[in-house]
Length: 204
Image (spheres, rainbow, N blue to C red):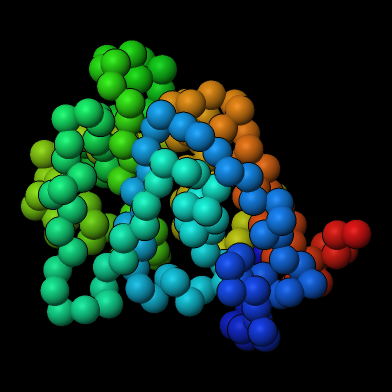
């Protein structure tokens, strides 16, 4: 497993946060989807070059990002609970259900995924400290992550980067065209990050 370096990328691209000679912005797709993504990202995560959730926002047209942890005013997610969407929290809580074809078949409405983005402690607070979404289902992808390399050290065999997990979810909700495009974007982010660390050769 590749450990994250402590030193920061010098002069990163302001969009993809990779070194400018490794920038992947031209490779980010623009994807239409019925499924809606709301990324709830911790403010500290915005500065991390290994963050992948922002790439999902850039790729998915039906998406938005909300920032928590940057002010004294608590983030309110209650306006996301609209009847036209089947809203769920994508988090492996104890009562989380598997996001699979059976789950999708239970409700004809398009899915809205609220996805916490941050370290485990930051993400878990979205699950426990937002009473306005306490009643919505929790869903997860429980398949083990068999990737040889990771952007960050994972503490469980199911641990994934945010974009990697979103790609898996959209594979179920939307199919391989959207989910596969997101996974390709994650793999490109991973390869270029590892190239910047000297683990893999730089792309030509």
